[in-house]
Image 1 (tube, rainbow, N blue to C red):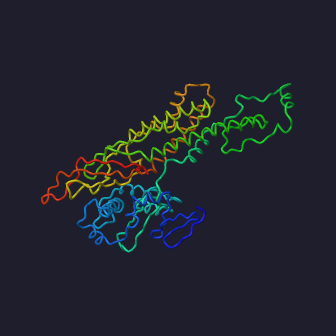
Image 2 (cartoon, helix red, strand yellow):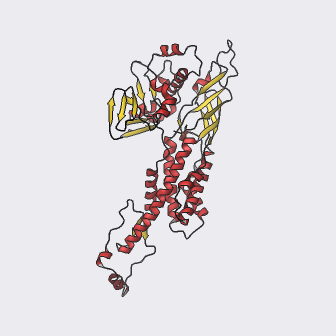
Amino acid sequence: MRTVDRTGDLLICDCGRRYPVVDGVPIILKDPTGYLRADTMTVVERDLAPEVAALLVEGTPDDAPYARLLEHLSIYLDAHWGDRADPPVEHALGAINQRLAALPRVGEAVELGCSAGRIAAELARRARSRARSRSPVRYRPTEGRRAAIRILLAFAMPAPQSSMMKQLARLKFSGNALKVPDKWETPSGDPGAKHWGDAFKPSEKSTSPDPTAPPLFMPHTLNKYHTDTQKKLTQIVGSYMDGIVDAICSAWSTWQSTAVMTGLLINGPVASLGQVVGPPLTPLILASGPKKSPAELKYTNTISNIIGTSWLSYTATIKVPGLPWYPAFAAVPSPVAPPMPNIPTPVIALTQVTTPVSAQMMKNQMIGMHADPTAQYHKEIFDAVCDAFEKCFTIWQASTMVTNILGTGPVPTFAPPVAPVGPVVAGMGNMTPGGFT
């Protein structure tokens, strides 16, 4: 899209595609139809007084679209702003807000997955705060309901971008300061130094090295044959690392869009346990990784197998450590709680063992599996790829949210009029694909 012209409540680009504008916010997506098919109710919902909204859903089933939307919104508001309610209620972000209050001031802070905006509001007290969220969310201040804020930055946090991982891998490899040709020693003494000086034309004695930044290799001298070796190796190794990183990030993206978390145990508002299930990374990486030569195929086979096995070992350890994901399930006025999504939580907040995906662990496993001590620069390549993977994984942990785990379950103590409400007991929660955002 080169230019966008505003026409009424539509954005129209040069190619003729049209995008809706709601409350002054353009909804520009690759597939707006698919998004709106699932979220139209959220997009077109109006700001109504709570009493009016309650009256509109009075007598309607709990699973009616607008009733579910209001219930969903209520859960998010309680989780983020419960301490501002009248009377105040315990809110899920209380402990996080206390930790934020102790942070020093910074120039800029970014929250990925801002949801109903409480953390972004807290960060704004200490920095220029930027909030990003996948879903459109409205929240109203406790006083002055005429004011309302809509956050609509509709995109999911993707798996790590290959451009970042490539740069991290190249930086790590560059840190080895490898000089080429290998084991070169400039001739000295008589007649070695004279022969070395007489063997080349003046134009060959001082040439430009490869300008790639960061430099993967350094020439021993500026002799043409040394800089040519540097350029050739930089192209070969750099091209391979870029290709394998592209394959890793593509596989990671596929995994993230299809993986789910299932088998959560829900008792009252608290969810625990669960299991992450997703496609194996090994065949995905192997399918698109570099394989132009037998050497590349062997490297790709080693890297894809170790990363795939390590990722599977890591994801098998991810469990929910007893989080208050379903506040409404503490008192449900029906024999069975209607399906309800969990409170979005970053992956890093879950119980997990990250040792399998540590750079040192994977590097050692790759060296062992490759089983070829003579393979040139294999340790440095494995080290660079694993280090970049670990750094991107650390960012992914903190920025990826666990969302849309639909919980439900029986309410065995529900017995009106004696007990008109009761907690969910032994309920279950299951994520729909795309819940890791």
